[in-house]
Length: 341
Image 1 (cartoon, rainbow, N blue to C red):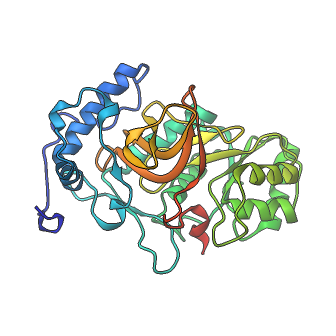
Image 2 (image 1 turned 45 degrees about the horizontal axis):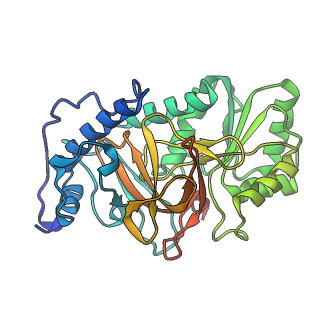
Image 3 (image 1 turned 90 degrees about the vertical axis):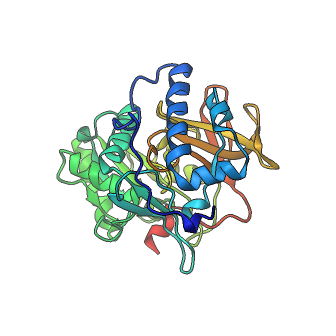
């Protein structure tokens, strides 16, 4: 059956109406059971994923451990409606891209689940958002309503109890003054933004940050010279006189985020896992410490696809932290820096 011939699909939720499991995943077995439930639902109710599994001649009934679940190549989000909802989507998130580039589209069944996912994830790594002043070097929500990252920051800004929270991409000098005032008052602050804008701020409006966490969200393709994450963090550390620069790893096709607090080592929330595939054989996986393609399980993607083969390169460590090493040569330019083009 051709994808284009599929009619609208309205499955029964079969007992999973509570949505993705954001709690109770304390053991490998608990994660395994949740991942298998999610897989069986999506294998039956997501037409794109179902046909992909069919093309692999994959026996969906034989799966007993999540490590045997096939991953859907992320390119399908550019060309097909990857969705398993029983009603029309509540919102669509679109990836940023250059002119003429086909964006990825993530059809979101429930904004409440996305809010729950990024809110609980943020709490795990940083605590309640109410306790922080958020300064975003990103376009405002009114400018980029279909950006999942901008939506997340807009929500966190509104949750903050500090009136200074907001978007400051077009006013670096004003942002420096705001940072100085917040530092003087001892306010816990998060400065989050695209890499090139953070570099511009650090180079042209340096400020000594003691109470501020700096979180970079992506690369600089199309804006400045490409830097390794190590070099990027070194320059930001010098400009802000900070020992550690944090990072956020997310994408349009996911509803969850991983965070790094030092040395570019990312950690995931309990409902998210990383696997590293052999770059020469996408159905084989590498042991910890070896570099390869990043596959992601994100159980928050309950009504799209939770098993995604990305075009990122990385390395997984025995403690389940991971590094981002780059991208496959022929993959599209992508990244949050393209939000502002």
